[in-house]
Length: 212
Image (tube, rainbow, N blue to C red):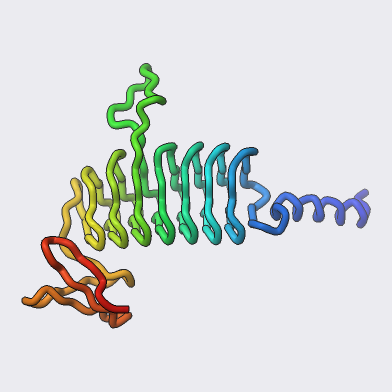
């Protein structure tokens, strides 16, 4: 026979398992290893695993069934959707979005019988970039600021800031604003975001924001 006091103790224990010192939220099924650094306001959901020596910034959201491997760095306000494995060598700056089931790699020529832990390549995802669902990022590449990688794309080379890329292998098909809208540049190389009204300039195949 269960006693009310026992039930209260169990509920309190579960609550303690979900909240760590009031700094961040972790669901009771999440595994948080010792030696990781998790910022204030971050939320970690069901069945996710945060491994030692990883660093997660403030106000991040880590979805279900996510793995954050050792030496991974996530900046502030990074959104990681369900079923994403972030392997050693990946760095995501502030405001990065990782779509459901997107894939990182960290070895260019993996073999089961050959250990290549000392050959992990770095992948850098710059501030504000978004990577769509089921996209794959081949290691050793840089995704530029505010770039948008379309769903299912396979990225095999560096991506420019503000670039819109799709396909397998991925190719650039245009430019995108910080609000995620296509930028249609006029004959003088100027474009305006339809949502924010911010203005951009395209010069020498480089996009810069010229007004807020």
